[in-house]
Image (cartoon, rainbow, N blue to C red; front, side):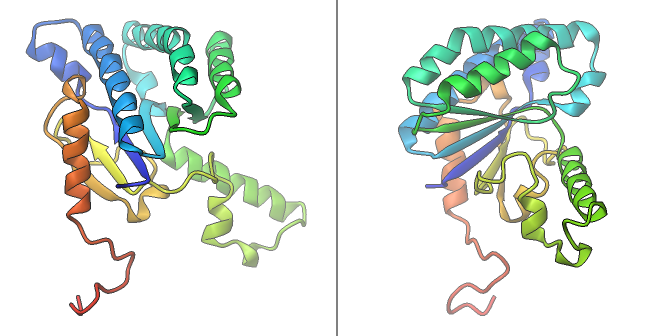
Length: 236
């Protein structure tokens, strides 16, 4: 069983379009799929579930759709936070908060504060997140330390840079799942995905359920993870 599963939740718009429904209905059904997936991850004993909820590139979408997405986020936190807390789920938020509306920032902080002491599933929500921006931010922090004389450039290592990312205490994902059949990472966890297995499933996110999660995990478990080394007795 993977310790950390990350999911790119893709296909809400296509799900809605295939049914002649507005895109916002696809996003609503996507929230229901998220609820199912969190419950399934808890039941399966997964330690960390990371979801790509809103990318830094999503701001280029039509204002009406962005408004719908923000309304869904507000509703999800207000409606589901108590249940998550009761289920011993810890919520972590990664991404940039500068420039977000004040009530959104307060809701994100409330979710983290309320569940900080929980010891069950850790639900990492990547919101207003971009992996390139995350890496650039870490490099900027290191550059400041070098400029101030607190660090030598020669001492910068992958481990040190990684410690300046948004959530350095979270283990890297064992498997990254993307729905809708698209086969790319789309600026998601580029640093952390160095040795992650990638599983692409053809269904759109609103149709994702426990069976789909178990199927993706079964695919992950069939693979040999080498981390740059050799598989015993194969020489490969």
